[in-house]
Every structure is written in C-alpha cells, then in structure tokens.
Length: 364
Image (cartoon, rainbow, N blue to C red):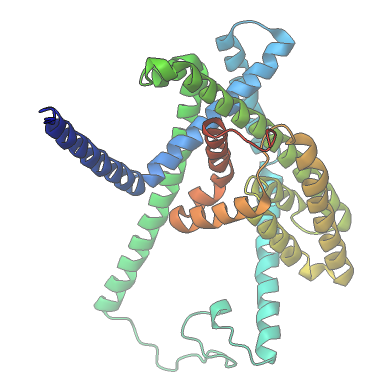
C-alpha cells in the first residue's frame, strides 16, 4: 500500500493561499492604478521629458564631449533661452494673432449658424447671443427699469465667484502640472543610471540580464521616437506657418504652432489642426479656402508618407489601426492624458511583448 506523503496537503493549501493572495493583490493594484491614473500619466510625462533631455544631452556629447552634468546644464540653458526668446520676441505677435484668429473663428461660427438656420437646422448648440434673448427679435429696452433684489445680486455674485475660483484653480493646476513634469524630467535626466539600477534591484538575479536589456531597449525606443517627433513637429510648424502666410490666412503663426503641437497626437491631432485651418480661412474667400485645404492635404501627405517613414523608420512601427484603436480606448478611459500619451505607451507594450514572445515569422 502506497501512502500519500504528509506534505502534499499543506503544499496544496499553500499554493491555493498564494494564488488567492496574488489575485487579490493584482486586483488591488488595478484599482490603485485606476484611481491614480492622472498621477501616473503625469509621472510618465515627466519620464518622457527626462528621456528627451537625456537624448539631447547624448547628441551634444557627439559635438563637445565632456561630463554628463555639464552637457545637461548646457541643454537646459539652451532650452530655456529658446522658450524665453520665443516668448519675448514673438509674444506680441502671437497675442495679436490669437486675438485676430479668435475673432475670425467667432465670426465664421456665426456665418455657419446663419447658414444652418436658413435650412431649418437646429443651431441652439451654436447660440452666440446673450442667454434669454429670443431668436429673430431685437431686445427691447425696458420702460420701467427695476433694480435687482438682494437675492438676485447674491446669487449672481456667488456664481461669478465660483466660476472665477474654478478658472483660477484650473490655471494653477495646469501650471503646477507643467512644473512637476519639468522637475521630474530634470531629476531623471540628471542621474538616469541611478533610477535604472534602482529598478533592477527588484528583479531576481536569474532575470537581471534580460531585465537590463529590456529597460535599455525601452529607453532607446522612446529616445529615438522623441527626437523624430520633435523634428516632425518643427517641420510641420514651419511649412504650415510659411504656407498660410503666403496664402494670407490670419493667425498663420498661431495656426502653424498649433499644427506642429497637435502632431504629437497621431491621427486625432491632424484632424483637429485641419478643422482649425479651414475654419480660420472661411472669411478670406473661396480661393483662400481651397488653397488652405490644399496646403493642409500637402502637409499631411508629407508627414504621413515622407517625414514619418523617413524619420521614424528605426523608432516605432505600429499599424495605424492598432494605434487608432488604442487612442480611442485610452482617450475614453483617461481623457486627454490617454489620448496624448497613447503612442509611447503602446510602444512600450510592443517592446515588452517582443521581448517576452519574439517574432517567429522569420523562423517560419
């Protein structure tokens, strides 16, 4: 008669307990990630900025060599000087063009509203008139003016204070997030090896070599993608600015800057930039509209068929449908953060999957 070893039952119970703890821990980790998604995306943006600074420092090493800290200080001074120069030299021009572009877009929205009303389409969502004014009738002056009572004044004052507080809070939140990203990027770029070695401390010794290769591969992929993205954004900014200036579209500088900035968001950014360009050109005549639309198509053709394949051919290769689906999914879940950072996140996932399950097509 063969007896079952006494250690079998405790071993089975231990396995079940470990599995249950693992499932609960994984669920808790997912819940924590869900509720702190904004903070995690903010940290990821800081890491991307640190990778960018580190990439620029690496490029500078090929020119002057020297210590990493010295090169990082030079890069930060150049970056700060560039931003300050744009703000000082182009601040007045940008402010004037923003004002002109805003008035142009508002007038074109009014034109579109009238066009839709003439054809019986409801345009309440485009109502630019004062609230409470009847459509098609001019406001009549009151013959017996009545002073508002104390309740109305208190209600209006409370609404104004609440709206002002919301705007101020949103402004300071945006400024705070900006400085958090800058500060985190500087910390990561100052000592990249320190944080790399800190992550590897949690990796078992038998997987240490593969984990180091994976981290280096992710860093190299993000670095090459960021440098290529900056080159693409700068090129599209210059082409759009010069082209719209030649056509005579108001706010060409701002529209070019927005086009380059929105290029950071693949697919969706190009659509938003095109809508802004067409909307801004509606008041300049049919020839300007056709020219602006042709310029937009030309710029997007160059970006999709020349610049991106040429600059990004060694950085990231992700099918457009996969990227667009990921943008929709992350955008619905996490809003603007998920939409803007979908591409680098998918790139990291692709690198990890390729490392865990290498491509077998070459073998087949």
